[in-house]
Amino acid sequence: MKIAVLGTGMVGQTIAARLAGLGHEVTVGTRDPQGTLARTEPDGMGNPAYPVWAAAHPEVRLATFADAAAGAELVVNATSGHGALPALEAAGADNLAGKVLLDISNPLDFSGGFPPTLFVKDTDSLGEQVQRAFPDALVVKTLNTLNADLMVDPASLGEPSSVFVSGNDETAKATVTELLTSFGHTDVIDLGDISTARGTEMLLPVWLRLMGALGTAAFNFRIVR
Amino acid sequence: MKIAVLGTGMVGQTIAARLAGLGHEVTVGTRDPQGTLARTEPDGMGNPAYPVWAAAHPEVRLATFADAAAGAELVVNATSGHGALPALEAAGADNLAGKVLLDISNPLDFSGGFPPTLFVKDTDSLGEQVQRAFPDALVVKTLNTLNADLMVDPASLGEPSSVFVSGNDETAKATVTELLTSFGHTDVIDLGDISTARGTEMLLPVWLRLMGALGTAAFNFRIVR
Image 1: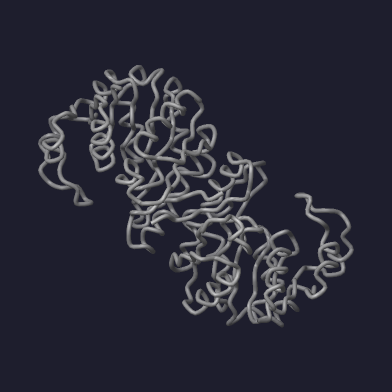
Image 2: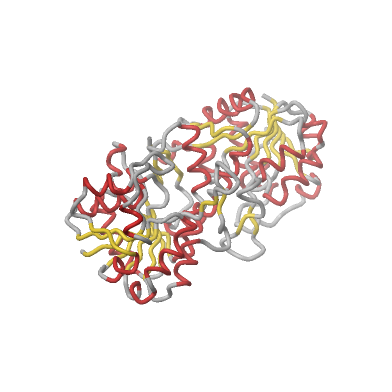
């Protein structure tokens, strides 16, 4: 499948590499490709600059948000929470219309320090904001409840764990579930319409505290039933 | 141990019965014992009226919030979210001082219908509100992330799952962890101080949607790592 991955950070890189490895034709979208390719410093989390990663993944193209989305059958939003709507606006409503939009972003607000709070929650969600802003896109919120490495290789935990999908379109959720299964997810739980993204986005506060308590991000929720 | 369980609803009944079964001396606290004993109708969830339950548990005493707390070494708050602070005020700060206060309440607001929202979240929590209101109590937030039957018998799921503790006092958390272990909990995760209750209280939105998606409340989170 032709897939656009919007966002050049750790999540975007990890998802793009995994999709390319599975044989998909992947284009990473960014605001300014020249600027992205001119980066030399690691990001704030110590991840290598995009060109370092790109050199190891020559099969992945880099393009503007709009060009990446235009050529894609499915679009992954792997931006930060604050970056989501601006990136999707740059991608363009026309380039998203009728397409599955797999949204991983979390509404984290780091302005008050660590742990971050949520800039939308409880009575609304970032997933719903994205769906309202792009009513013709088929938004599916997923993968926002685990770290990047586990998103694409949950089997590395050595024990089954769970992942969630929220979205209004059943066919879009089926497509996303198929992708998730190809990553190794064995327990994909359909929570319902996009408003159920409130639930998974509000998992982040306990995720962050678990990371602190366990001293690792290599964990995931399993729904035992 | 002499234990007070504040709240006569399903959670209070379930916890009280389990503690009594383990040999503890249990007193259930209520605002108006005479009124509680005069009830004949099931509650809104179809649970039997308190006197019906009490007849099956003659070893559990019923008393005012204050009398129950005064005679207890450890106090369990099993009220609703809105009921928590009023019940604890009725119990009295003096009767809570220096004691472990195991707080199960969740800040659910049903005024907008189902699913409920949270009346405190993200930058504060009900656990912290309770700790601030009763600075001499040793508040430990726990058990608020699973249904009543599983709180006291997690082994019935047939697979290990996790439960969390949040609190400022290490000795109080150790006491609560021992109680949880006696219920059958095998993975008690200490998230840190009472502010980490923000995380577990914010699990409720996804818990509620999982209940809808799975069609059962008989599930729990396991932290796979």
